Image 1 (spheres, rainbow, N blue to C red):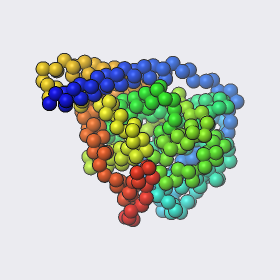
Image 2 (image 1 turned 135 degrees about the vertical axis):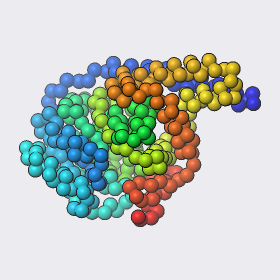
Image 3 (image 1 turned 45 degrees about the vertical axis):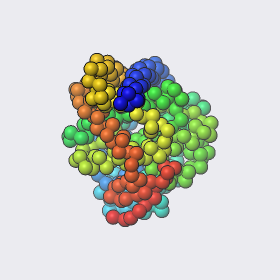
Image 4 (image 1 turned 90 degrees about the vertical axis):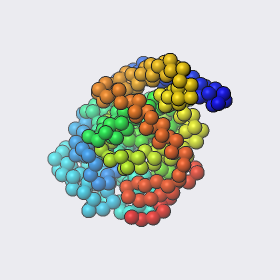
Length: 378
């Protein structure tokens, strides 16, 4: 009992420190002024597609309507029967002034179909500055210009964009988006503050073609589920600058029922545990409210500590959701974050168990080093 109480107390105190670090890290990130664009290089935008996501047409339109002098958009689908193919063709016809192409890749020869699509598009791309953006991403009009301005730094090899998650109509989608916009982003900012950017996050990554070639191309990350994290890690290990961009993008996560949302989040946590095993254990400090509730359950008279914890968490929520992301969801639904924190804590615990995931209807086995392999078709 005494040992358990002491351990919980230490964890709660550690979570307070983490909340303070989140606020400091967010403030430091916001202090960096984005560079003014001067000479803007031509850009190749790579967009892997698979099926029709919620709001896909609006997402793609946001790329065609970028305020940028010279860029191309490459789309990739496995085959012409993919429902995303005719949509891409319709938009290509609607915006003839934007250079764009649709590639049919066929079935991928390895587990990570997204990486295979990126590899095929990179081979067809004309330009040396590459922006890779998922189908569920939406850009503000000046995003490409802002990213290109950051690459005026000759030491920069790769940049990754923070994102503001926009949920669908479902309750679980809203809860997940709140967690992404507060808890997940806080972890990214703290890691950047303490150790620098030695990783990337997936929805949007920009890189020089020479950087991708130096790390071994997409062949170096094709067997990893978290290919985004590994891409940034390899770039840093090869001596290239890695940047958390000043440009915040929108990540439209759609709406899923509880079971599908849980499978999606378990896939993410199990992948994270294998990509960063020590960091995953350290995520215990990113759950201040569940830890405080456990402490009060063991020692009810210590309830004032739970109140202090709520204040610390509120400061961290403000720093990430409001100061950095200017997120309307956090402004309106902040009072749901304790429920989201508890759900995230339970998913984090569940992430210590299991080594299989479901992704786009297929079952995969996760290997200890973060690679994955297909188990069965269907």
